[in-house]
Structure formats: C-alpha cells, structure tokens
Length: 153
Image (cartoon, rainbow, N blue to C red; front, top):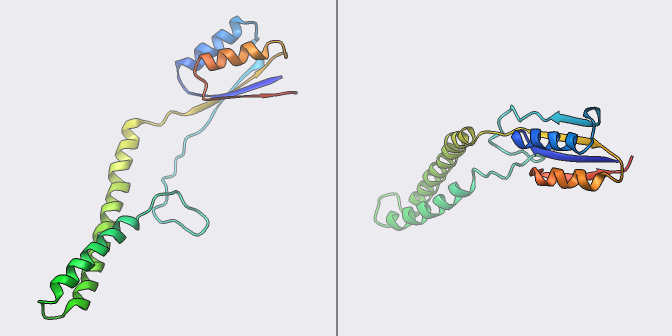
C-alpha cells in the first residue's frame, strides 16, 4: 500500500517523517518530492484559451459608466453637447479604471505576494503494509498534511 500526502515545506514535515520512522517505517520506504514554485509571472491580459480570473476591465467599465453619465449631464451646458461629453467621460473613466486595476495588479498584489512568501509544497509517498496504513494516515494528519490519499499496489 502507498500512502501519499502533501505538506508545506516546514518543520512539521520533518516531524512527520521522524514519527513514521519511529512507528517502524524504514527510510527506504519514505519518498519525499519537493515541488517547484511558479517562476513566471501571470499574464496581464487573458486569451480565449487561458483565463486566471483577474479582470482589468470591470473597474474601468464601472467608472466609465459613471463618468459618461456625469459628462452627459454637464454636457447640456457646455459647447460640444451631451453626446460628445458623454463619450469623453466614458473614455476617460475607462482609462482611469484600467490604470487603477493595472496598478493594483502589478504593484500592490505583487508586493503582498512577496511579503507573504511562497511556501513550496512537498509530496510525501510512504510504502507500508495494509495493517500500517491507518496509523501512517493518522500520523500524516496529525502533522497537518494538506491532503492524504491511499493507493493499493
């Protein structure tokens, strides 16, 4: 039986491995694989086949609507009229909203990701007997595994 789990790379992983060895699992039956973190930054604009759920359009559309209404209302008393001033307001509002979203995505969220830090994950694979599988799984959950799965071999 193979018991697989994922951990954050931390002291808890080392404690889990030590507890497994104390419970009779030999070192050659424990396999830990560290996963690599993403090194490429996310794309700003989505394509037809790839979307990351971050929209640079929504704030621009909302501010464009507000500025278009204000521009059209004020445009009744200005020389070019309400239609031109509504279009000018919509364009300037969309650009302002787009730049706000771009700034938040590029600067604020990137800074918070750097401060928060990325903890790499480790996949831990333990080969054991069917009798030991329950105790191995309990040990892994006790040391805060992110997920645990069993596979019969």
